[in-house]
Each structure stands twice: as structure tokens, then as C-alpha cells.
Length: 101
Image (tube, rainbow, N blue to C red; front, side, top):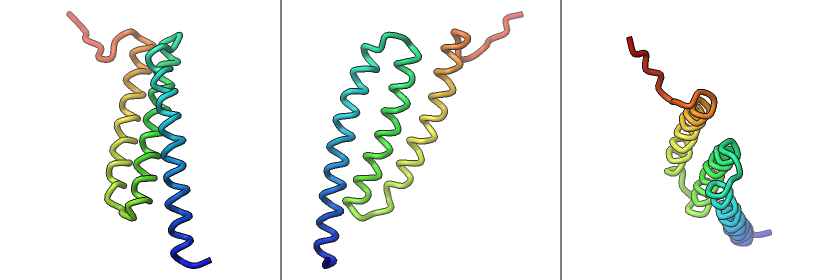
């Protein structure tokens, strides 16, 4: 296998993965909108964020750059904060507790 063949193969696999992740995002978008319960919607939103991280990783592979690593980390941080907020909202009904004296 030559280097050019290997690069072409990696590019084709990355494009295929982006295509599959895009289909997955469309299905998850349906679940986010129509989901039967709020926990189903929250789970689909988390998985959609993970898919966005994967798409950013695949684009970074295609562009042969490390500049998108910061974007991937930022999406991960925002997903974590969002998951905590949604879990608290589903459990207590509010995100910020205000003690009124």
C-alpha cells in the first residue's frame, strides 16, 4: 500500500463516518422533538452532542488539523453542564433553588 492510497482510504472512511453520523443526528433530532418522555428527550440530546463531537473529530481528520480539538473539548464541557442542568430540572422541577425568606 502506498501512502497516497492510505490517505485516500482514510478520507473515504472519514466521509462515510460523517454520512452515518449525519443520519444518526437526524434520527436523534426526531427523538428530541417527538420523544415520549422528557428523560428520552434529554438522553437523545446528550447522544446528539456526542455525535457532534464525533463529526468535529472526523472533520479534523479530513482537514488534517488539530485546531478542532478545542471545539471538541468545548462541546464536551457544555454537554456536561447541560446534562447536570437537565437532570436537576427533571428531578426537582427547577434548576436554581431560590430560598425566599
